[in-house]
Image (cartoon, rainbow, N blue to C red):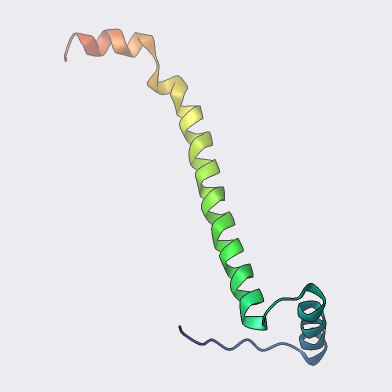
Length: 75
């Protein structure tokens, strides 16, 4: 596993310590690792959502019966 360093202002670091204790996280590392994975997963889901919308929008173009009749002559 690779180690990274995160610097926080003193007050934010104290708030993070209190939050981790209150929520019973095993460590700061586990908490931050979870946030990073959550963010990466949401980006993947966001991309999938945009791709689904684009595909749905293009269905009108792809399912054009007029084009199908024209192409049938050449295929």
